[in-house]
Image 1 (cartoon, rainbow, N blue to C red):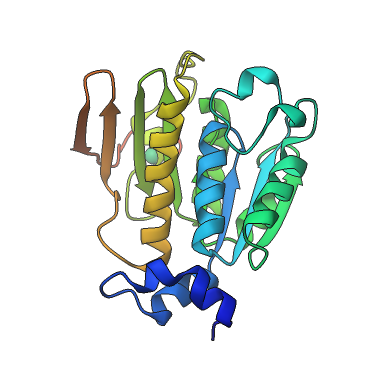
Image 2: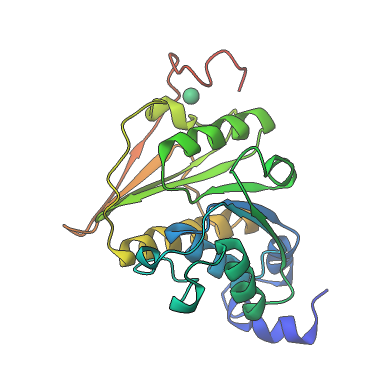
Length: 244
Ligand SMILES: [Zn+2]
């Protein structure tokens, strides 16, 4: 079931009470699509590769810029000017070769639809609501759950969107909402990305309680964590009338 190397590599998982080989196997058999390899994506990709999620496709169209390096921890100064997906693939394969990586340099949606259609979970690591709404529509159309995270300055929000069960993104953030600011402390992307990676691991392994139907809001300026229940909006222009 697992090689000797994998048994050693995931030893600290197996040391967790109740985490057996069958739990680790769920991760190994899982397939995720990570939208974006920036501040959130760097952390999510790193932890999902280190955790042994079997198949990870990820998409980004950018090259590394020096202004990315305060938070995008997959990259170093030597990567400036290189494609993010190429640098990320090199770094992630060096971490764990047993994970199948499917990098896509391109537009989230158009250039990656076949990977999204094939995944068990879409992970939103993008930096703008326009692209998030594209992902939300694909999530509804393909009936794929989507882990949403948004982060700015000292704040972040996260939830798990499950078509047919929970609200969609448009139920609580209307399409066309004004963009959030671009300022961010790197550690904030680390916090949001780590929670997003943790929620993905829980969802894929079937462990614990998810954020489905609840929006987690973190304000690190005042060190406050809160959750609120979110419900489907019957007037949602995106999911109402679609039958999901
Ligand atoms: Zn909706």
